[in-house]
Image (tube, rainbow, N blue to C red; front, side):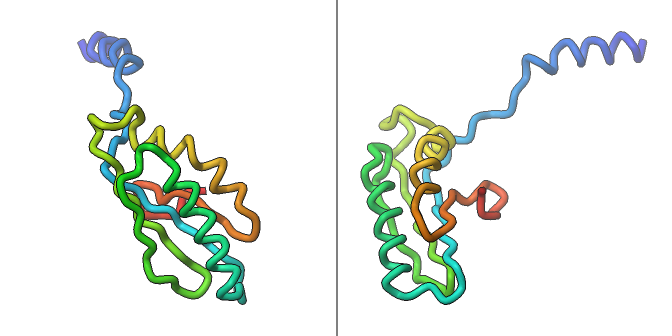
Length: 117
């Protein structure tokens, strides 16, 4: 009986998948090298903000107060019914452009609150 139950569970598992993440917001993490100048921090932050602001999914973008070597941008996305992509798809679409910014490590914060790489 246990084998039959296990086989039934295995038959169903491939059809199940975790739900696609579709949050109302996201956070961009900007990590700069030690000793980065204020001008360099501003340049990288402005470049990342411009990339994000150009996205049609974005409703608002807030720059959190910078800390040494670290800046975060908090993004409010439009309601799900007003955008073509989920928040996860949005993040995947803009990650390459953010990672191409020279002089910093830029990524989206993952759901576990650790900087994504």
